[in-house]
Length: 228
Image 1 (cartoon, one colour):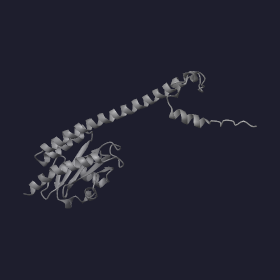
Image 2 (cartoon, helix red, strand yellow):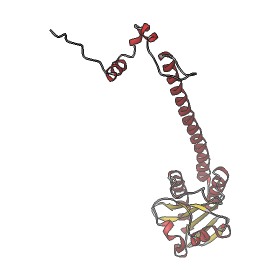
Image 3 (cartoon, one colour):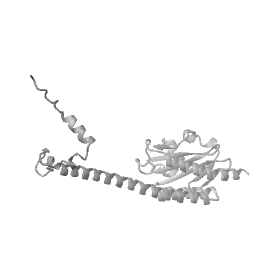
Image 4 (spheres, one colour):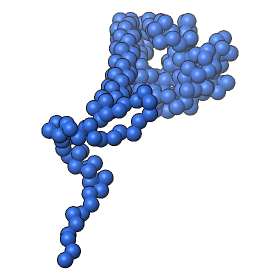
């Protein structure tokens, strides 16, 4: 008469059981003395030490992750403070020249750009510092830039670069072209950098689009006032 042998338990079953019962060794500490954990000299020699090592590694990873998150939060806080300063300066602007000055000071001093140019469409031409007012018909060089719905970053064409930055054009290696729209196309804000990698075609434009919307809201009534 043959005896029924118990079914052999696989390593996978043991591992699954221990995963479902993580406190198994709490009542069976004696088994820890009989377990063998492969190791080289200088590394862990028991399950407790092995588990401690893994927990320390995870703790380091979590610490690094939290450090990165805190760094991003601090950077966002700095960005918010700079943006707030710029928006308040725009809100205080009483003239279009005030707007141009606020833009140049904020973007060049606080956001590390090198030059700015503000072109606004008006039938009453005027030019002062980085601000130019001109009829839309005289700005055909930037038609492609003002007719798009969002900011374009990267390299402008030689004609666009020359039109916007004029005597500074040969220094500008990358730029952001921000359309200004409030019910109608108002003009274009161009931000130039002497660094070819500062503005890139694949970068996000959320912040620049926001600046464009804020500037558009400020200049729209000022332009309307010139028509009266």
